[in-house]
Image (tube, rainbow, N blue to C red; front, side, top):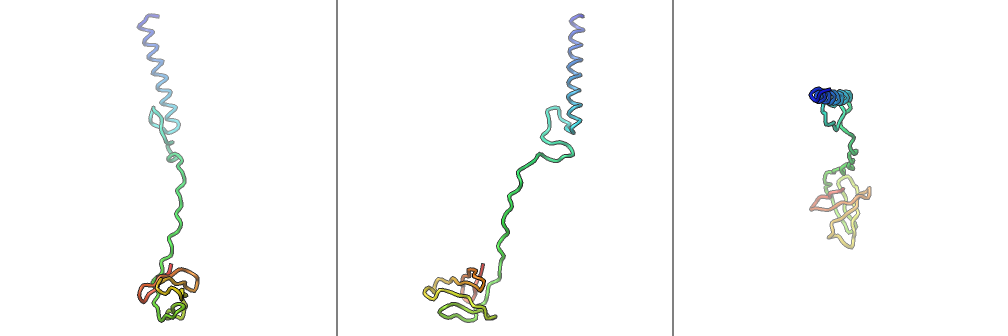
Length: 111
């Protein structure tokens, strides 16, 4: 075999290997010779699951205060909001369900 024929045979073999590699890449749906980070028809690679956030606290409208005494306040529906008699200036009360409420003027904002 002459050197010219030898080089042609080597180049032909290299081309055949290159095309065979491209064909095997086409089987998995990847059009790139360098490889793909995804597989066609199967979506993107697996990712960490998203972290679920806790639900936002329920927002309640402010409660109108009807009257107050040394132990707390009462709304127009008769619900009692207990406060600390020793610290009325703190403005912190507990609603009938035990949730914290903060007084602002004639309103209570409960959370």
